[in-house]
Length: 425
Image (cartoon, rainbow, N blue to C red; front, side):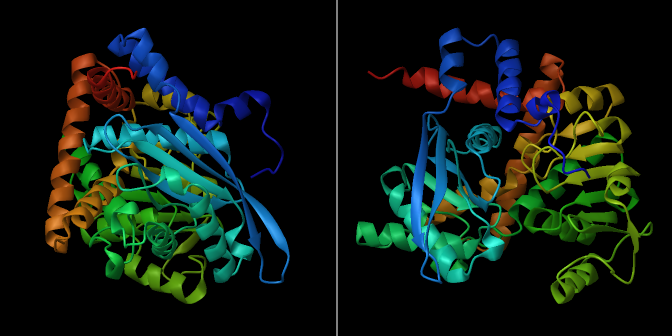
């Protein structure tokens, strides 16, 4: 792939906030949404930019930039992850916050949408430096956090330990332990069983629901997964356990292929031992683009935004696209995929398993009563199956594609709550 800057038209296509706006506008148009409500819902409630001075291990002081965006709290507290990455931008965080609003509404949980990020490179930072960045970022936005205000979660380059630091920082200021201020925590600090697998399990559930529409069985279904982190790795593991044939896994440093199906547990052990999926003995190397564009039943992008664009959508040969990542497909690519007849399970539905189980964790924290893993998984499956059915019912009723239907369903629910509440003052 070229390192050259994208052309202006492609740069516009790759802007996640513009994509979020475009999809919202289409849904609002089809719903004939009131003009005033449209103006309210198309912009965030607040955008926080904070500067985070941190002393590094060598004694130097660095100032990092952090963001937290609340898109909507009409249906409940803001909910959304915090990512640490060098390429975090306000437009990206804005879009992700909006997608969290729509995602929570699709699965019908009482959350709004929020998202956060810090511009930093965790790969060159020590654990102590990451802790200091996390705690100072938390302290800087403390007044906007809380179980009834905004409940962060892990995202790119953050994890359960990051959430433990946030919970502890918040709790120290409150002078008592507040487990419900974050989700995705370690089990010993009030985390929920099934949370680690939740997004991947959700992808597996909605893919199986899609297979029913084509009278297909998992054991007859070939799958290509892009990304082998939490979402991609768990999707692969759970799909493998349910009989799917995972023929290719794609990572940033290479891709592996086995036409008879990869042994996912062995591949996970290989990655744990070597730090990479490359050179897995029971596979052959395959080019990244070739792997994405090979003929398969299901393509599951589980990496980052903008992986499927106008430059490669025409070459995709999947029957079903299950979006494990947030915003992996651009608006321009959507038009191409629709003409090709690809059955798209949009991100705000496909990867909503994470927000579903985050909701369960928040509920358990507030009750002080914890469920076993079977209860969590059963409730997640019930919620995801219902959300899939609601989305397809909207698609049929309004004669639109699945993505537009999911947005219409979500926007309708948030608009209804906003309208009922009215405008203050």
